[in-house]
Length: 117
View (cartoon, rainbow, N blue to C red):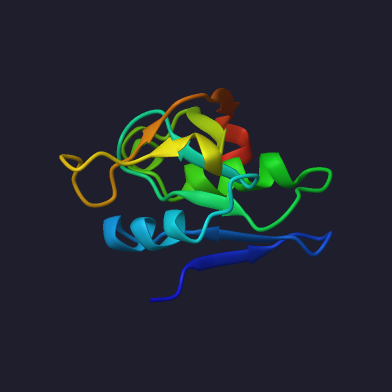
């Protein structure tokens, strides 16, 4: 299954899962050093920047994640996004498909105005 994909002006590829199973596939191919994004609330794609991000790529990826989230679709308000590295993702046997734990993260607040652009 293919991922959603955007290519930034700087040529960076950003990938997003389409559903829980696709999120599993995306996380499996994520390198330890790659930047990954997911909404603070459940119900969004996992989004990753392929390789090293360039200027503006972090915000672009966070907006991409927020636009496809349940939080944005239901509330149409600012969306909080977790930003973390591939090495910080873990999976326990009892976790459902598409569900992961994260050891360390930062929070990015994506404004409603950025999502309406």
